[in-house]
Length: 246
Image (tube, rainbow, N blue to C red):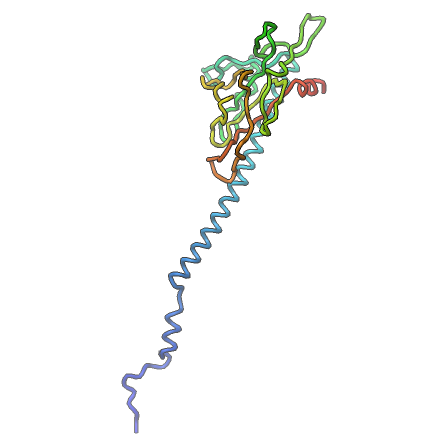
């Protein structure tokens, strides 16, 4: 006698098989976990890449400042005068710019920092003999007896700046500053010197340039730097004497 098969599931479609087929894909929770993990990996890679990129730009900025310094030193060696510059220097063709006649114009205006911005020049001062101070620009560096030339030295206390560690640096001939990734000069002690738009200015003995960093820069943040991020380089009279003697 034949047994009725009405209502029986076809072969391979039992309850166990149906449960296995129901679990053949990912659940919504599993997909969400995978997406979160991928996001974390991508974020970590982005932060690491930004840090590497900013580190390279920082190194390039320091190299650029060194190139400007070396250019100015060469001109001081040949001219025996401290660097001169055009009043209101803006490095714009047709603007306040005169190279190669002016030292700073010639050395500064051909260089941009890694963020595409001009470098700023701060010159030191010397005693004017009446209790005041005057800019070094255009004055003779060394004495030349047969020419009747007297050399000038930056004033020890008036021609100074404060470095990133909070230490006084005396006998400053000049300082070069890149505003860094954010494009902003960080401290009013030298930012205000350029309020008129010039790229070159004389330091204020009563408010020397202060590069002391209260907050270390965070180079992992792209384009928006947390903390002071200006890059600077200075040259002192003792360092200049050593370079000119080489």
